[in-house]
Amino acid sequence: MNLVRITIVDMAGGLSFVAEAESLTAFAAACSRNPLSAGDLLAGADSYYGGLRDRVMNGLAIFDERNVPGCYDAIHQAFDFCQPHELPPFRVVDSRTREVSLRPVKTGVVLFNLTQKRIVQLQNSYREITRTGRAPIFDGAAHTGRMFTYRLPRDWAIVP
Image 1 (cartoon, rainbow, N blue to C red):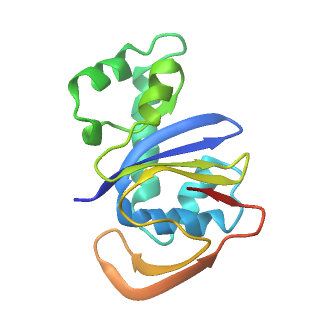
Image 2 (image 1 turned 180 degrees about the vertical axis):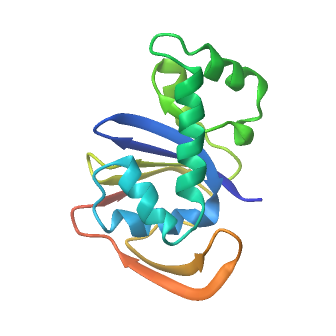
C-alpha cells in the first residue's frame, strides 16, 4: 500500500498521521477552500476521501488521553516500538514528535502549513501535488465513479 506521512500545522500547533498517498489530492483540494484549522482541512479532505477525518480525530483523542502536557512517554514508546508506517496519529508537542512528524514513510512526507498557506512536499515519490488537479472520490470503502477537481488560490504556495 502507498502510504505517506501527512503533517498539518495551524495556529493551534501541529499534528501528524499516516494516510493513503492517493488522499494527497483530497488534501490539496481542501486547501483550495482556505481552511483555518486542521479540523477544517480534515473535514474538507474527508468530503473527497472518506474516513480520513474520523480516523485521525479518533487517533488524536487517544493521544490526548494517554499523553499529558510535559509527559509524552506513551507516544515516545510508540516511536520506539512501532514501524514508522504503523504509528498512530499524534500532536507535535516536543522536539521528538516534531522530528518524527517530518520523517517520511513509504512514499514520503507532506506538510500542510495552514498559517503560511504552503504545501511542502518534503519527500513525495507518489505523485506531485500541483496547483490544479482532478481525482476520483473515495467514500471510505470504494471509489464512487465520480470525480472532483480543484484549483489552489494564488496565495497558496507549493514547495518542491
